Length: 153
Image (cartoon, rainbow, N blue to C red; front, top):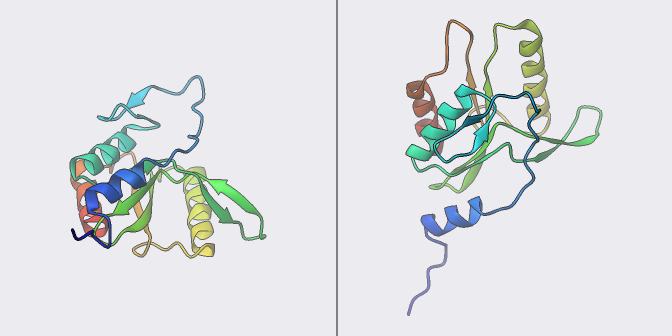
């Protein structure tokens, strides 16, 4: 019998998603928000993203720890919102959702995070997906679906 050289996509996805990792803790006063996979997330927008990824069959890990080097050379662990797998190319993409961009302090932190990613060769469109929202421009499943299809299908 002939054995495949590479794992079929379904087996590869299952193996990729089976990686155990320690999730970031939730503060005791954090709202209890859950995805359709019964996974706790931090915002309603993250529910939308997770549920769209699930519906499209895109494997993801929520707040998977990633070791990055800061501008001063220090190695630290960060937790992007999602790490997603493009099954066709078998490449990983970080997905950051910046949900309060009309808040000046939040926007400044988002800019610092983007600079940190650039320092670590993580670039929008190459291996980073960015979604944003403001109070008058909320995230939508349609917008998330377009981003997911563009980079992960």
